[in-house]
Image 1 (cartoon, rainbow, N blue to C red):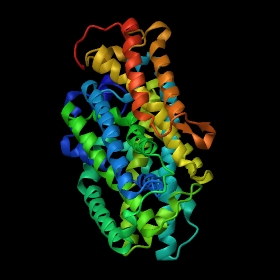
Image 2: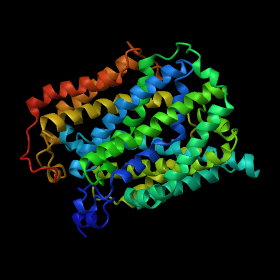
Image 3: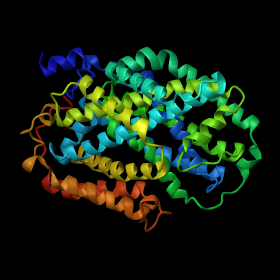
Image 4: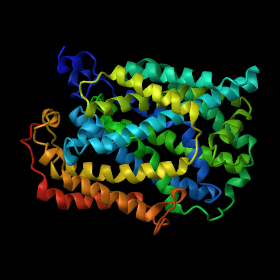
Length: 456
């Protein structure tokens, strides 16, 4: 079977353009997919980082500002995937060159393996806590790690359309909505709501908080086209993705902040998830809410495993998705069993520093320099219009690296000894604007437009 025939029969396999007939995710399906991906214990953990350095009202403002910025960028990335039918790492061949795209691909695979391991760790810890507290079955953490890794693997092999239509739309979204509403009600009625009006201590700069909020939707940018290529249209891809992630993004960040202030949850940088799980389980019916959220958490593991396999295929197109997923799942299993969850805040800032300027380069190339015209077939040819010299577009690579330097220069990475020059300024927008603007200048000198035949 040829690669084209394979893509037609199994559209979640390979990096070929998804045929129009197979782009079956409508507005509701796209919204549900991204809403479910935005519901995570780890989102609440980041909300916990914002307070008490910020008061609740300022934290909520930072959440809203960061969510608007991050989800708008995420939606724009989804548009490119919908227009071309191609996954994100293949799209990066246009501004970076065929071989130039391998650098962000390797970084993306590494971060996705890290995210998948984080999700498995979180799910295993939550399941172990529930089993210990309510069933009297302690010490089963390794078994839960194996179970959730296996579940994520099966979902990744099934593909995003099947997971969305058979599981997320029919069951998960409704169960999670009910449990989230109950959890919100429980926090507000069982906690000290007067603490939500207290001023912050000033230890968290407002724009650094915005950077932490922007980081989560941007962490999905390297994956977004992997799913939007199955959307029925570009408006569906933009609004379904950006609004779908926006709602739980804001809701769960705010819940995390409220848990700290109203319930007095104390964060632990070396084990940030444990206090959160204990606090949720301690609420009235909290064990049930925790169980529902735990079940829904599996879709994050699925997405990270699936997209890591698709990213590997950007470098090795002939490798089968199932084989790659199984290999990566084995790595995730080892990491989840051996490595604790720590330095999560710095991990988010590092992701932001890498992928925000990278999207600035792609956005400038696609929306401006190439007038929203990519030739999908040429992107898949090693000697095609996007090959550049030696397969690397050095103007794109240089712009990306300069954007990273701008981000880290402003925000720094305190946990790694990197002190920012102006962390109160916020690095997300400056690094995006710098990479976008610089690529417009350099790209006009080096980008040769292929003959435009539309997205196909």
